Amino acid sequence: MNTPLTTRHLFDYGTTYFRSQGIVSRQASGATRTTFGEIGDRVRRLASGLRALGVRQGDRVGTVMWNDQAHLESYFAIPCMGAVLHTINFRMTSEHLSHVINHAGDRVLIVDRSLWPQIAAIRETLKTVTAILLTGPAPGSDPDRTLDYETLIAESSPEFAFPDLDEDSPMGLCYTSATTGPPKGVLYSHRALYLHSMTLGLANTLGLSADDTLLPIVPMFHVNAWGLPFAAFWLGAKIVLPGPSPHPEDLLDLLQREKVTLAAGVPTVWLGLARELMKRPTPLNLRLAVSGGSAVPQSLIRLYEETLGIPFLHAYGMTETSPLVTVARLRPHHRELSYDEQLTIKASQGIPVPGLTFRLERDGQEVSWTGNDAGEICLKGPWIADGYYRDQGSSTPVRDGWFHTGDVATVTAEGYVHLLDRTTDLIKSGGEWISSVDLENALMAHPAVFEAAVVGVPHPVWDERPLAFVVLKDGCEVSKEELFASLAPRYARWQWPDDILFVPEVPKSSVGKFLKRALREQYRTYFTNPRE
Ligand code: ADP
Image 1: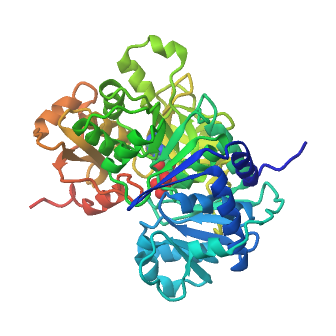
Image 2 (image 1 turned 90 degrees about the horizontal axis):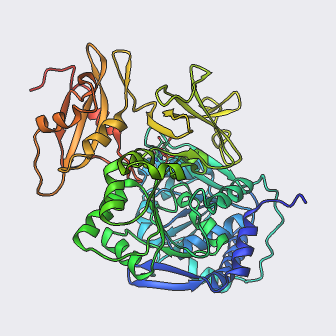
Image 3 (image 1 turned 180 degrees about the vertical axis):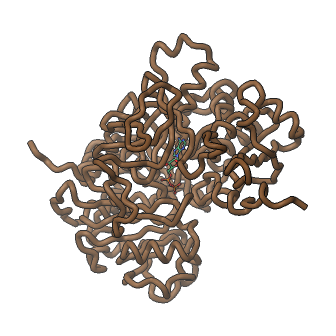
């Protein structure tokens, strides 16, 4: 039968078969506990309330919220009523925030009170917003022309009839997090979300199921927390939401108290948590620490698996790909390899998940999978974007039917992807390519190094040369010479950075990725101008 693949099925299934499954939402004042069944009632009330505010099918509703219960309610109410859930990255600059809300044409905004200052600052620039709902602990009085989310829920009917929707209609909208340029909008269809959610449950990927307790540390505005809340609700996993500004101590408490089995975040989050775990060894139930969003250093995987005894899974994706593209799981025959050899596979981006077709391309030609030849990752599949939202077409990423990711990689004969760099981060030195990710990995393998970032900086002779930035672990010291010596066994002299600078921290993007654009800009003249 040709039944449409829509978000409503995920919601109906979760509220029918997992009514009593729990949702824990951390607040500044403690945690609230509820169930899928109770949420179901509130989701329908929210949909009734939004309809009363004038939200119709196809309208965009923006969320400026933490990972919490109200956000989860919006995740289902907005798409199930046929509107479009626009999750907004509140760590963007005011200029970008105003731009994405106007560009999306959001009709209603749902804003956490603790994030209100960001919206208050741009309120007068918003052209399409007709109502603002405030969530979170209520202070004495709210700003003018805003409504209280809880009052709306209490006063709205729980009898909302969700419409039958076309599976190709839009359910969500995310903007890229602007690591490399201005944010661009990506629209997700119900069909894309459905198939992507199903994929997260496959044993070959994350194997998410009703046996799990999920902690999405990745923000719900960052590619829908990688789609995990949708999949967890459908598949009946208990959901633990970390709430406002979770620090590593808060995360560790939640992991322990709620017996979390699967948590997901970017490498910097895992690094911070590892530091906390070393200070405060705590027995955990984690069956999988999932890391994505940027390359993961081998040293971090080793720390989790060998020292802390927690299995670590590396995944790769992007906003334009919903995001899941690849996961790095070992195959049975890899288990006969030494741990060091296994680590090379675990730190690769892995193989594409079922449903996607993959091609490596250079100058329009397919590149073979030799493990050495580099090319751009190109993809086809039901949850890959075919363009940007309300874009003039100038930057279309789809050519000849393939989505061009802008990521450069090599692929082993078995299909394991080793991402070298984004095209913008790849260092082009005298006609050769140097992978900044590889060098960072090697530097971070040194026991004194906490973080390392490498960027290409203009050079009068070689076009570009690598420049490294190193953050040392607390109380550790190491000289430049020692770090160069640690690169010597694996890298030819010309591949070494020309200089290593010790810095207190590496600048990070709003979702915790190294902000290499900022480093490149700041050190643009490092090799061209004589230094003082
Ligand atoms: P932005 O492009 O603004 O950072 P995204 O979150 O969509 O927003 O970033 C996707 C990009 O992040 C990918 O194209 C890739 O360059 C990088 N990335 C994501 N996951 C990984 C990973 N596991 N390893 C290396 N790079 C990654």
